[in-house]
Image (cartoon, rainbow, N blue to C red; front, side):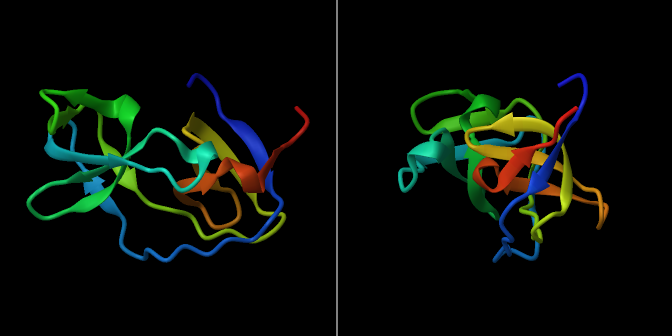
Length: 121
């Protein structure tokens, strides 16, 4: 994305994950099931390495076969804990989630788009 967009958090959300998982570009993953609990979050695939397990956006997986893939780019599975009215500078949107920086805490991570409202530019 060429430039970021600013969003305001309309609903507080706390993450359950304190240690983000980092997968490197070119890393091989075993591909599992697609996330199915929310229609707005389609496109997240359960992936595993010998040491890590997390949801990964399908757009960054280059399938080698039905069960194996390689990552096209680095992926950081960090979810942001946010408070109502925090500002998020969003750099990327994928599958119902936004990757960006919490302006107040200077932290990066993923936030569900459903709790964000685009600021007027």
